[in-house]
Image (cartoon, rainbow, N blue to C red; front, side, top):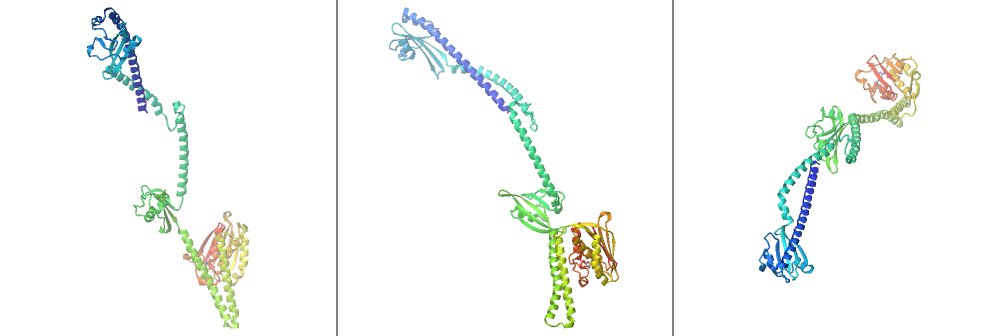
Length: 546
Ligand code: ADP
């Protein structure tokens, strides 16, 4: 900008100077020309009078300082010339000033010679004898005048240029300084040039817009970081060369590194390298790998910018729970089939014997009882499966209501009194009323299963104590028996579906292997926790804390 101002000022100065000089010279030149013409006219008058008095002799007597004088005959023949031999001169009849003099008595002409850089001024008059007398003078042309003035003109121009530079530097500095001092972050419109106000206002608006956008961007970045940081799944964004651009903590943990600074997954020997190579080749890669005892699904996809691949995105998803669930589902299906097959095979076998008439009439009641028992087992099993699936899917067809656990326990004990008596097991109910918000039928089923187990897996003359309490206002059920107990290694597994410590014994006494599973799911449905404590040969205590 300073350079432009400087150049502008210099150009203006130079142009002004040249124009002034040209005007000045032009004016002077015209002035001198007019003066020369006036002098020539005076001399012409003298010469005319002289010729009138003395004739041609007068001309030859004229002093040398007199202007060049030419006497031209009526036909244009030069009769006399004070500068050149007249016999050598061409006819002057057609000269402008001569023609004018012959027609108007007085003639004047100015002729320029570009080659000689001269101007010839002629003044002529017609005498009484019809001849023409002409005086002339030569002066330098305006170009010659200018050439002659070049050296002083150069000095003046150089001086003017120097002054202009000084002036231009000062002026441009004074103009530019306030502009340089503008704080572009917070421009003050009042303190600056009026002409800059629209620009500064625009900068203010732009600054506010950029600040708003930056804030939104940071907000989005924070949200993204918050989401990805709290993700259990690993997330990585890589550039074309395999360099990590973005990541979350889980990804670093799975990669076993502390930092992703300058981490290149194509160069380092990690389990992600094959997936990454595929993604950067434009192929989606999906693979399951085992890491730290867990199973991870690796998904790597290319990231496109229009046509070309600019990088890759990698997700590492923990599939352990899904796989465990899948295994459990498979085991459950196989267990159910097995559990159903056993009683059905028995029923089928007995009925076949009966159909074929092989069974003796006196044995029929025993076989019929067998069929009855196995059918009962099937119904119990199917009922248990239905209850479990309802709890699994949270689709119990009843609404919650206040349930007194003490009353429920009492009713369960009444239902089981015959079974207890047949096994010679005594039952005691202790504690007080404790009300929970829940589903009566599920709570009854839970207490029933615990009490049923306490009787089933008890010794002869054993004892079962049911205690209902509400320590710190939280209801609690405790079923304690003096039975066979459970070995430590089985304790963690007795809540699994179809898990029995002693399969044949359990089956013999009518167990389905689903009782404790229903207890566990029922408790979780009511937001309660189940705890089991047992000593082999001494007894078992199962508690449910609401
Ligand atoms: P089941 O229908 O076979 O009783 P459960 O799910 O109720 O199935 O119990 C699972 C297994 O846990 C039982 O087969 C039994 O071996 C053991 N068990 C449960 N309760 C007791 C208890 N009170 N005393 C000893 N063993 C028990």
